[in-house]
Structure formats: structure tokens, C-alpha cells
Amino acid sequence: MSDAGETTQPSLLKSGITLREVLDVAMGFEQAAKRFYLDLKDRVGAEVRPLVEELAHEEQRHHEMLAQLANDDNLAQYLASTTVMPGPADETFRSYISIPALGDDPDVDELLDYAASRERIAHEHYAYLAEVASPGPVQALFTFLREEEKRHESFVDRRWAGTFSAL
Image 1 (spheres, rainbow, N blue to C red):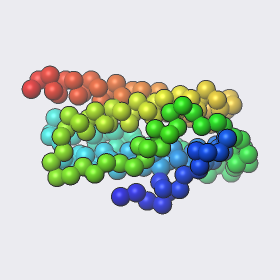
Image 2 (cartoon, rainbow, N blue to C red; image 1 turned 135 degrees about the vertical axis):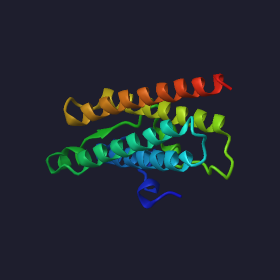
Image 3 (cartoon, rainbow, N blue to C red; image 1 turned 90 degrees about the horizontal axis):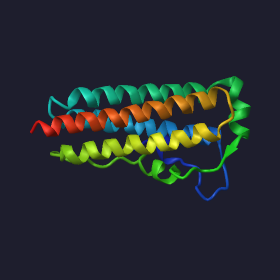
């Protein structure tokens, strides 16, 4: 279910990883999130489907933003030479690149809990990266992604609570 871009990850044993490696891992995370939500949309009821479709679209948009930054020729040397220490959420963030098998009849409650967890760990990861990045386009992107993921987590939590409190 994963592609080559999602399985090639820098070693966590390194004392630091380049910003290019950070972007590669983040792009894998966003692609996995998009696939998770696209697979989920056909397995949930009509009341949850708009949320899942919106999240899939936003994760694709995040991937495109990361890819644009990663492929910026003006930043190539900076991305290749600047290192950061793996953050406190790095290992958990990487674990979410592998998405769970959903099966034919997934428990929507568990899936929405998982989705909220994905968004929470992404928020923590991007918050750390925004904190350690030098001012400029990389920091601005991580700051934007931090806020996006926080908004997604709140959106999933509110939608989840509203959907299941009505039952």
C-alpha cells in the first residue's frame, strides 16, 4: 500500500537530518494521509464523507506545497546542508506513514479517532520544525502546516463529537 517515496526514510540514529530529508518524510506522510482519507471516504456514512473528502484534498495540497519547496532550485543548497535534530514527535510521525488496513467494514469511531491522532501528531511535528527552522520560506511553510494540522484535528474532533452525539 505504500510507495517508494514513503519507505525511504533517513535513519533515526543520525544525530541530525537535513531539511531535504525532513521534507521527503513529510511528503510521504501527506501522501499517506491523502490515501488514507480517500480509502476511508467509501467506507463511511454520508454524514462523515464530506469531512473525509475535504481532508484528502487538504493533504494533497500540503504535499504539493512541500514538493514545491523541496524542488525550489534557490533553496537546494540550503535544504541539503541544513540539519535539524529529530524532534520529540519524529518517530511517531514516521510511524503514521504506514496506514492501517481498513478492511471491508471498519469501525468509524476507531477510524475517526485514528484520523484525529494523525492530525495531532502532524501538528506536534510541524510545530517542532517551525520552532527549529531558520526564518524564511521553510519556517513559514512549517508554521502554516502546524496551524493547518491543528485546524484539521479540531475539525475531526468536532465532527466526530457531533456525528456520534446525535446517535
